[in-house]
Image (cartoon, rainbow, N blue to C red):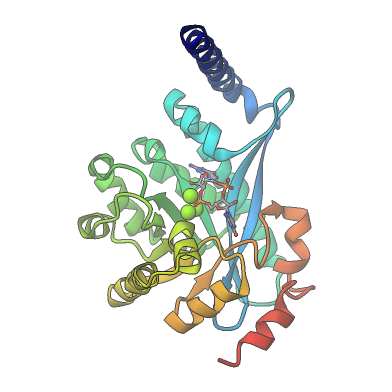
Length: 295
Ligand code: C2E
Ligand code: MG
Ligand code: MG
Ligand code: MG
């Protein structure tokens, strides 16, 4: 009986594996045409000042509405796009779209112009045309280079960055700002910071969650240490995954600069977010902010 059950388990496992491989292959081939077919779109999530809840910018987050498989998140299809190389043309499209959108908002917005954060995959940085692509997206949209922040995930192996060192310096020369994304989740190291010379450190949501949920003191000290490190390197800090007012209180105590997360706003279609970024409508949590800002 045990033997039969074992065989059954293996078969279920094999079938699931086959299913995953088939899905991956399907995504890989469909991704090639996804941009042209209008299946990709960008969600935007606001970046908000910890001190007083002002929107200073947005992060563009890619979404794929597959005609048969439904909505697919970037954590699933970006790795596939990196493997096939489709990320190069997709990434170019993301830059063009996002720069145009934020420039449009900035022209219609009363307050200070918004920053735009765009995620960049290691595979894009390795592309010879990358710096030109960034320049083209800026000049075609009219977005000020000072507004653009390129986010590089810290989950990329540091060796991969060696290839891109020249590209990084060329981006610096353009005056584009760089952010390290997901800091504290992967290969975080001082040599990485030295190589990249980022302007912004984005603290991974997991670091904030651990500080909020784990009863020991170590996790809170880690969060505190990351903010202190960033401060000593004159980097702006952004906390990702802010979900509750206690998170915000903690960040305010640590003097973290900016926050991003569902507590303020989910990533949304541009049209939905427009009232908030154009300042016609306050942040949904403004009243909450006002009551907790006294400390
Ligand atoms: P990321 O750049 O670290 O983006 C933040 C992720 O956290 C987003 O996931 C966002 O939807 C999610 N998030 C926002 N607020 C909260 C919150 O309060 N709690 C929690 N638990 N999560 C929150 P998303 O949109 O699924 O994107 C996943 C990752 O895919 C991104 O992580 C980024 O690394 C990558 N990605 C997204 N768009 C692009 C793109 O255009 N190009 C490239 N190369 N990568 C992208
Ligand atoms: Mg990001
Ligand atoms: Mg992140
Ligand atoms: Mg992430």
